[in-house]
Image (tube, rainbow, N blue to C red; front, side, top):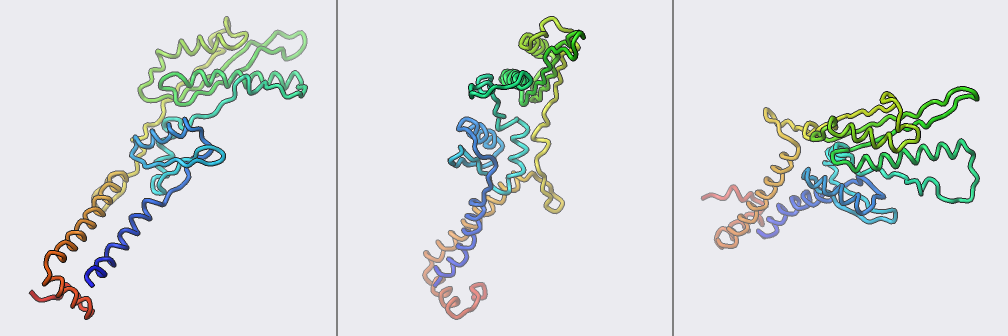
Length: 264
């Protein structure tokens, strides 16, 4: 009888723990294996228990429901998953369709921007890189050709030094765009924006007069659950070691009385 009473105490606690562990939401889908691994590694560094799931379209990343907000902000702070970009070969793939000169020019500008963004993204500390390219163009017959220009946007991490990297970025972009090798420096704008630190965005939970991060709250919740299970196991061990107490408890349970009312 005492085992039955103990079971009614343990089963609800286990159900709650299993439900908390199994409640997950899909954070990203159709990722490559490399992108999914980078996402999992970053979330693990933030103590977020993420999992991979293989689908027909690629790899999906699942996170606990209560961590979905933290996971989104953590990945945004480091620019993950990385944006997929088209190469020159992808944009100008032979498909047997004749394009107009305007379409070919637009496709070339897009492909050139994608290539530059991909190269800039390989620099250590660069989270997001965007490049907007304007090629030399004659607006109307007889008018002078408008020079090429470019605008570069770099979102970087906190330890990134824009002043040391700016000249190299300017040289690389100017050398990669037709008509910009000897162009005025005003035709090439490079803007650096620091990424917001994820630690500044951590959730704080108020518990009466105390405040703690959600991560620390979850830690203490798990400690409380483990302690509760330990107390129940200790109680079961005491019942097993003390036959007289076990018999009295069984009699109380059978009669419907509370074990706590047993006189000493």
